[in-house]
Structure formats: C-alpha cells, structure tokens
Image (tube, rainbow, N blue to C red):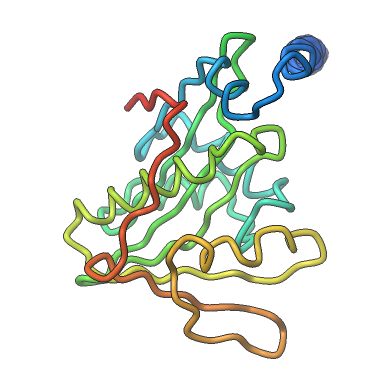
Length: 208
C-alpha cells in the first residue's frame, strides 16, 4: 500500500510539473497579467465544514509556511473537532483551471463568540499564489462572517522566519491594526459597518 501511495504521489507530482509548464508557456504569450489570468478560466470551489477535507486541511496547516498568517499546526483530529463545532467554521478552497486541477490549496478557520468573529487561521499553498486567490478567499470568508451576523472581525499575524510576505496582508485589505508586540505579532480588527468588503477578482468562478 505504501508503494502504491508513493507511486500515486509521483504521478500527481509529474502531472503538476507538466501542467505548470503549460501555464508558463501560455503566460509568455500575454503582455497583460489580467488578460492571462482571465484566459485561465479558473474555478474555485469552497468546502464548508467538510469532514472529507479534514486530512488535507491538516496537511496544509502542518506544511504551509510562507502564506500562513498564524502558522498554527493543527492535527486532523483537531480539524475534525472544529468542523463539528457549531461555533467554528472550517473552510477549504480548491483551484482548477483549463490546464488542470491543483486540488485543495488553502484553508481558513473562523471562530465565533457572540457578535464577534476571529480568523484563527488563513493559509494558502505557494503554488496558488500570483492569481488573486487570496483576495477571493478572504472575500468569501468575510461574507460568511457577515451571514453569521457578526459585525466585528479580529485577525492576527504571527511573525515567523518564512512568512514575511503576508505581514501586511490584513491591513492592506481594510483591517485596522490594534496592537503590535515586541515579537512582531499583530492584532487587527475589521468592522463591516465601517469598511467595504474586499472585492472578489472578476476572473474567478466560485462554486459552493
């Protein structure tokens, strides 16, 4: 079984390299990034509190370093417990384009208390970056929070050696910095009555 599993992983990895090569070839033919992204015919699928996604979400939590706002390392058992908790939403996001399926490439964990939401985790695989997926995913999460009736959203950035690129992710998207400690950890707040939700990029079809 282990050999079969490794063979499947090798096959998927080879296919991924091949499709990525096709994307690069296609990108070289465009002088405008927006036109290239539009040409990809990208489809995002959101998985809401989906037990079948728990293992993959845990893998992302364990392995994702660069685009990971809090770098919390959750086990599959912990993810399952969050999915089954009515006061927590666990979202996963998959990406597909005309060249192939990248699978589940991101996750978010949102906790609720009264009229406040906390974005506990927000992370994306590096292979999905450069397309605006992060904006579409955040837009979806904030709308889900709105539908829960929450007016305030807290979020965090926990500094590590590898996640410098996301240090300003939240404050560049309408979140207000509340606190920054000596270790570089930041706390943000988003008031949906004072700020407009980040717009989802136009070149995605979002499927639920």
